Length: 389
Image (cartoon, rainbow, N blue to C red; front, side, top):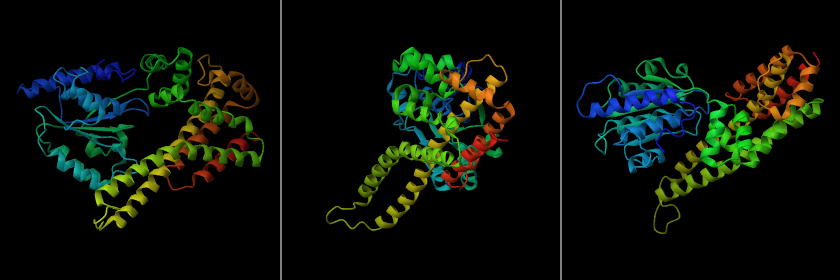
């Protein structure tokens, strides 16, 4: 099983990367080649596997066999423990300049091995302006064997000064059949469950695995899809909003608590807090800053969970529009075709389209400082109100 195994439905991207790995090997031996470059930008919709592609490429560049998937270099690179692979993954809304400056300093060093040093920046669209400026100099004047791998949803999400110096690779949303086959092969998911998860996730690999392997995820999605039929009056709208907010908080809480506890233990170890005879100077200030960052991360996790619910809700109204327009394509929520058809008969395609627009406007609003509960309440009331226009 090679390093490319988890790149589902991305054959063209894999072919391009494999050719670049071959060119990179030639470059290491002093042969001139145009197939390899020092900076790459991986873009694609959520769940398409852009960060997986960056990690797989890093592993292949460090592998003597071009990405066999079984050697020590491949295994450690994919696991994030290889000395020549450095990743920046943030749980915060932005990537700040301090993190990038440290990365740039590290990038200036020679690789620990005899091949390449890989610097992976996931969510490069979250770089602050000052972080972008700090990164730009290293990309403009890269060390001889350092390769930058940046990931973002679209090319436009990255500053023009950065993207103009990168080779761009665009990943696509994987086909439903490919996702289902991947779930069956990788996780031994029964074919019917794999087909459902692939269809319901709309090509998002991580979401598909969660739906296939986690009953709680399936139950949460099922509750979200009941919302359109529950919006009867103002009270029910507020109740549905509160339920969505509560479900998102419950979904995020275990991950938040686990990460918070781990980070606090690490901080206590660094400062020697609680150790007899050790004066933990600066621990209180560091702990306060940690708590501030953890609160921001917890908010993001809750908003991410809400966003997943909104996407599920959008899939329902998308199916309604499809039925209203006479589409013969398979519905995202095929198991709810009767309910979808009933709603389709009772409203117009224009109204359903406006409902979709309201959902996507709420998703965008949640990127700001609006209260998630207020945003959800406003959305539920809007979805209900459109029915009576």
